[in-house]
Image (cartoon, rainbow, N blue to C red; front, side, top):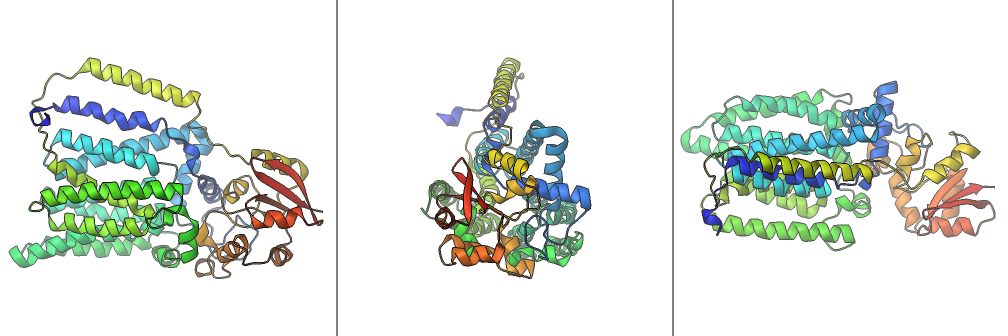
Length: 475
């Protein structure tokens, strides 16, 4: 059936609109981290780059703002252009991601338009489903796709000088999202291995230029406000058992909870499809393609946040093996374009009406109470997920979702995150914990052990309940 299907490039381009249509149904409130990112951006624009943690009740914590430039960009659009401005900014970044996926697929598939556009649809829909949200990862995903595009141009001899842009990507990544900076060089690895093989087989000297560019890219990583501390940030922040257990995106493949289960099913299904494709085309698979599959598959299965890397580094290669050929160019299907444009405008209008673009929090009622009855200098306890919003509103909290910031390996003072895990798991006595910090107010949920202690303690009174959160005040 599909062997005779030969769509023209103009018909193929209509598929571009599918991911754009789906984008307007994304809920921007999927991620609470956005609030501490706003706080970071506000701090940088107001007081400059911080080196001491400034959002919590803890003092003297050494601090590396590992995504300072991402925070500035996100806060700038939100503060000056509002929710809709931030929404448009994410939409534009998504379009740029789609563009470079297309360019990457075109290089890999030797300019097969339909195959390339089809991969864009599949890959970008996957990214939108999980990863296209206001977080630094949208910038790092874009950078990795551009890097792959540059490297593919180089290894296919379509550009001898393209790799000179990699040091620029290194500078951008170290400032936008330094915790994933080493992955820039992990992605270079498979190409280096293949070029090394060509060096010994055909005396192809391109590997020497790649090594030189890689060394330069490492050195320019020092161009950031924190120097070597930013470059080594990942060494102090990942592989921590307590963080991996607590944060869903750090889980390995499994069926622990609903989100992990769905992500695992998606990962397994995609892996099976990829294995079938590789087996059927095993004689055509290049060294770097095979290494990408093995390496990023391992990364994804041991840490689900790496699924995006697995998808972007393997799916574009499928465009080579799609059997459908491009037809001859025909007149542009103007009517079809207009119909799709109207549908896209309708989806955008629906998104605005339903306020998918609007950021909100279920803690507003509690914040309003605190604003009317106290001041910003109180000592406030919040759980892990509630901290960022209260901090954005000007209150100093006990902890927030920046888990690695509260590790002694980073802050050089105390393992606060481990203390918090011990508290919610019952290993730390609630009375001992409260005596240490002497909170003025506490925001807790019924699931927390601390809730039972406060409810039965005459030293505290419950003053407000909102959206399954209870605000306790010290008498």
